[in-house]
Amino acid sequence: MPTSAFDQTIQELDALHAGDPRHIEQDGESIPRELWHAQQMSAWLGRLKDSPDELLRIAVRGQHLQRWQVSRDEYGEGRQGYLHWRRDQGKRAGETTAALMRDAGYSDEDAECVARMIRKEGLGRGEAAAQAVEDCACLVFLENYFADFSRKVDHDHMVRIVQKTWGKMSDQARELALGLPMAPEARSIVEEALAS
Image (tube, rainbow, N blue to C red; front, side, top):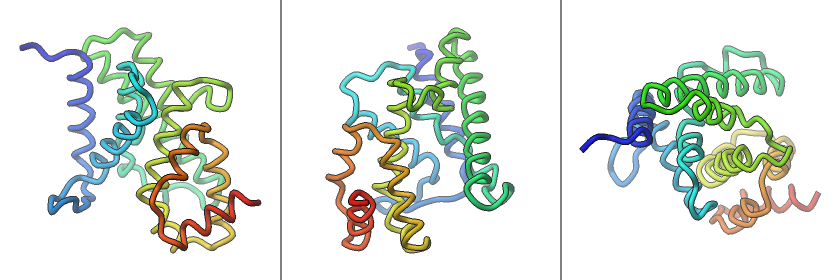
């Protein structure tokens, strides 16, 4: 049975994700970290949207593509360095995902639409698809990385990070985030951030 353009694109994305040399243990199985992250993104999209279209599903799956290849350390320290690194990562992930889509048979228009979602163009200007990608990324961070991250970062800085993250999320994503199980220390940081 022939593979659809959507299935081919997802398979190709996951093959690239599987190249991540870093692994995590899940249910006794070693999984490439980026492949696991992409699966978490897709799972959150399923909770946020009843029937997300193919293009949004591809954008969410490709949002974190091959991030391990460009170290954050290659950019300057501080917020500006981080923002440049993140912008370049989004551009690269968008270009790679769009190329995979074209190879699978998608139109240039659809491929560029997904690349814009991955770059989160229109975020904060009512672009629903970019908001959905951002919501998934924020929820994956809060659910899976926040507790460890909060132990490594200065308390006041962590409060500001939560405030910035919260500000980028939709009301629906915020409601889902408040329902996440959190260690008391992490919950305390969130409560402080939201009270300020």
